[in-house]
Amino acid sequence: MASGYLSLILHAHLPYVRHPEQEEVLEERWLFEAMTESYLPLLTAFERLTNDGIRFYLTLSLSPTLLSMLQDPLLLQRYGLHMQKLISLAEKEIRYTRGNTDLNRLARLYRRWFLQTLSDFEERYQRQLVPAFARLQQEGVLEIITCAATHGFLPLLQSEPTAVYAQFQVAADYYRQCFGIAPKGIWLPECAYYPGLEKVLKAVGFRYFFIETEALLHASTRPRYDHFAPIVCPNGVAAFGREPALSRQVWSAEEGYPGDGDYREFYQDVGFERELNYLQPYLPGGRIRVDTGMKYYRVTDKTEDKAPYQPAKAQG
Image (tube, rainbow, N blue to C red):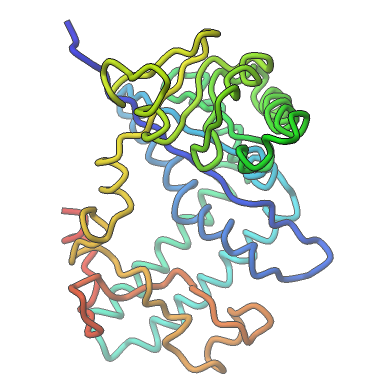
């Protein structure tokens, strides 16, 4: 008999950054970066598993603001144009780095990646990422949950009960609109809880929610299994806490894999390493330096002298 279960929970959220009144918006790059480096890779990884007959089980929260943007025709059109620009930049970088074998190899890798990403987006998914996630839920390998409507920090809204209720009710209504069923669970924004919140969750129809570990450990009745099992509130709604050691593995540069020397260095990007005139066609307004996503170096060590990134070594 199993002595326990491992629950993998991923939380996906971005603030609402749609600005049709402007042709180019800096904040839209948050969405585009996440689509390229998280959401599309997640979908393709999930589908590879199902195609190989591997039954995985995972929970993914998709916030209402993110769901809305992933279905917005204007943002999806702009994402396609964004990817075309990245492909153009990668081709330019292949020429620029031709005298450096390591960087040239990476420039070619980025071009292949961007081409494949655009192909997946336009042809494989027909720009419809939300239905692709929905199909995985229908197949029983993915459970999609929601988050508060605008990711509002609920303890600060505590003095306005109708606002808290609206955060949950709007989220549940929009989830039904997207997936055709009611959501069972919800990821509380920033995992922030205050006593009595479970009553509002119950009223809207949620069966479980996720909170920060400390909130679970300092409950009015100490949980028997610490944070390794959910606790059930008096009204029957279950509260799950995060596993702090696992969180540190994901986030901490000191204890986690982001600080491993073979991992890609996030803070060195072509967008800050080339002349402004060279980068102009790929920057917002042609003048605001931003990350392009093309990063040639690995963490290496706590040094400014970074070694070239080696994808195969990092993957190993």
